[in-house]
Amino acid sequence: MTKEGIIKLYKALTLNNKTDNVKFNYWVNKNIKSIENEIEILRKLEEDNDNILSNYNKDRYSLFEKYGEKVDEKIVIPNDNIVNFQNEIILLEDKYKNDIDMFNESEKQRFEILKEDVDIDLFKIKYDLLPSNLNNTDEIDSLYILMDIID
Image (cartoon, rainbow, N blue to C red; front, side):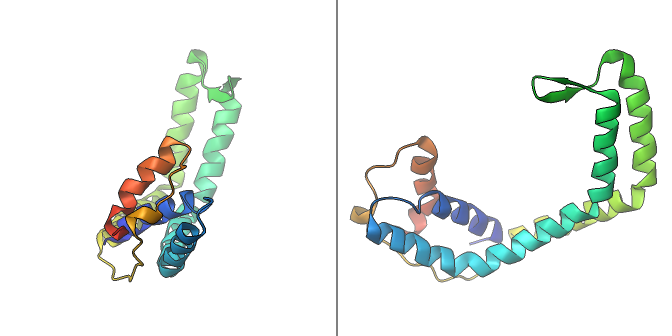
């Protein structure tokens, strides 16, 4: 399984860990424990990447506040402010060029890491122990991701 697959599996497991089926919950939590270390490492990589652009994002958000107007909980740049906004964004991108380049390179490396295979021992569960009372389509859809570890 790839590291990206581990992330999808983790999301599917955490979405289904609160059923009224004790054996199923136990199985879900055992598998979460099996992949927790890998998930934490991948989460840290993503967090480190996000931190590279933190100053750029703060300044960019300030430009949205300066030139934008709030419409239905979203910030929209009015037509009469678009040119000034775009010019300042260009200046901002020049100012943070090294950070942006570093972020792009780091993201490229992170995506390569996500393609790597990882050996993790997962616990299988019998099909008849799957919960029958899943309430929403996300929970039901997530079972498709879990199919490889269902007997």
